[in-house]
Amino acid sequence: MADETETAAPLLRSAPLVADAPRRNRFAFVCATLASMTTILMGYNLALMSGAQLFIRQDLGLSDVQVEVLTGSMNLFMLVSILGAGWAADLLGRRGTLVLANAFLMAGALAMSAGGSYAALVAARFVTSVGVGFARVVAPVYNAEISPASTRGVLSSLLDMFINVGILLSYVSNYAFAGLPVHTGWRVMFAVGALPPVFLAAGVLAMPESPRWLVMRGRYGEARAVLLRTTPAEADLRLQEIKEAVEAPRAPADSGGGGGVGVWKEMLWRPTKTVRRILVCAIGVLFFQQASGIDAIVLYSPLVFQKSGMSSNSAILGATVAVGVVKTCFILVATLLSDCVGRRPLLLASAAGSAATLASVALTLCVGSTSTVSTAACVASVLAFVAAFSVGFGPLAPTYSSEIIPLRLRAQGTGLGTAVNRLTCALVTMTFISLADWLTMPGCFFLYAGVAAAAFVFVYLELPETSGRSLEDMHELFAAK
Image (cartoon, rainbow, N blue to C red):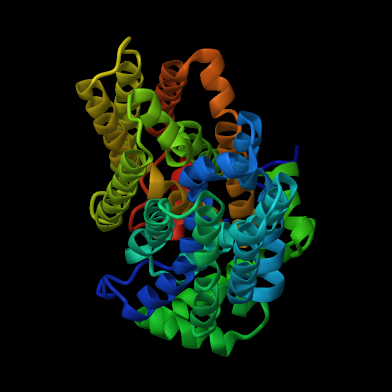
């Protein structure tokens, strides 16, 4: 390997933060909110299967394996769009790719509501997965590129907050339409998700393009105009920083050019020591976010509550609504605390809390004969796990991953990290029922508790604090270790 220090272009250049720059910027907040709202439909479509599977199984006579595949396959399918999202975002722009994502989300919702067979539903999940993959990658990239450093945590965390709003709405939809005839109820649940993408796409078209994408296209005047509205006190400094980052791959040391192939080569084939460590941290935090089993709860909580002793569908779906409410509320707490408390303390607290509460869920399911007390303890433990996860790993894993990746590698790097995240999620969600049959359901949650404990060790040993730091400061942190 070539000498990693030889004429290497700086990865994360940045002018120093201006001390008297305003801490909050309304324009950046509105832009990040519009981009993040696209992910409401992502959360809705992913989690709707939690309750809908009860009725689809009855209506179409699906087996356990078919339910597993239908529930978790979207995470696997979206790898196609996730890996292509960086290319699409660079070609069409961040804004154009988000509009395209909404089109696929609308088409997928309509296809699911009209599906009459297992094969048709799997095909509809694939269509939906394309929109979900684009939204999951491009929204955090846009938020990271539009946000001032002082509010990057709050604005980037909006993404996960809106995903969880979608999850909560899906649980409410499950509960609201559960009383309809079996053949109709689950179809209405999916059909409801077809209209919002139209309005969300219109909102996305009203926001400006990412300054970085505009610079990539040589549209410096437009980029500066956006920066004057997001970071008015340091617009020219930020514009120069972005120009240098965009032009860096064309330097002699970066053989491979400025195209997508050169970016992938720099990340995977000949990464410098600093790039390698950044990728390990960015991908590692996204891996542990899903490997700790959060989507086993999000998608299979009705089965967990049935195992704990609940019998009526209304009680089970009501408990899942409580899961959604707690998840959304604690995401909001994390959003408010991420910049003042810092990413690292919240991630450590989240990992430790997740390990303890997952073990508690497992213990409550070990009870030989269920009772009201054991059922209540199981529900309380599930809610505690959701709270612990949502105050740190939920919103901050994608935030941390997006903000530490160098600007010129960000679209493809975020796509790679998200692909690992979704692949891990697919593994969890497509094996939960089978794993519970093999290890028992308590065994599954003891396994997830062990993974959460490993996540705590990973955060403690590997992840430096990034809150409020300039890109140059973050580069020095990763280069020093």
